[in-house]
Image (cartoon, rainbow, N blue to C red; front, side, top):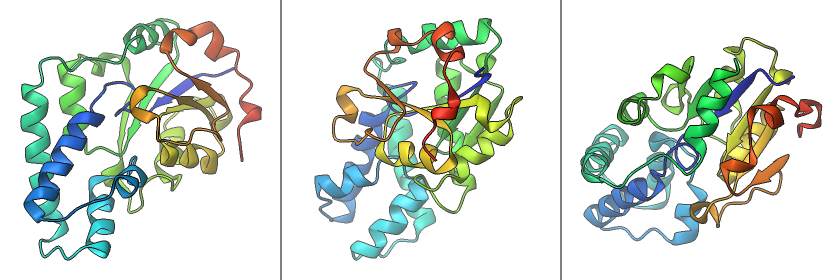
Length: 224
């Protein structure tokens, strides 16, 4: 029986992908670089640090990674605080409460920084539902490296085999696959360019999930 659900955050719990996109592309303009759409799509799911490390390999950027991170975070925070229509993705709030009320452990494992995760969780009062927060900034490699999900699973009250991951990005699904954890791919309008084909199950709305459906998942079907 599934006892722990590991959620990605951006694009799964809250639709911050557009805010991140705005922040990155505003910064690209400041840096006077043109990042092709296909390259930007390939960076989805990476931590900000790994994103800028990759960009510095492809473009002539003089600033240090730490300075780039701080600038991007400042642009993001300003946009986040002023975006009044930002909300939880449709149906995910109901699912989170349903799982929590039925004793399912919830963990968030996001490539975002702890500061950004806490900003989101505070705005939407989510801390009460999640036992642990795992940030990609604590790992040298981003998704698709499985480290973040393996660590999240180590915090579970149950063995890895009793955990599932909910992801919306190519890199996130690959990371769950590499960790050997059953993966539910969330296909939204903002993840249309992401490849979720190796997810064990793909949904397009959170009303397709419930405590009963998740608890009955056979995690032995996970891609290894």
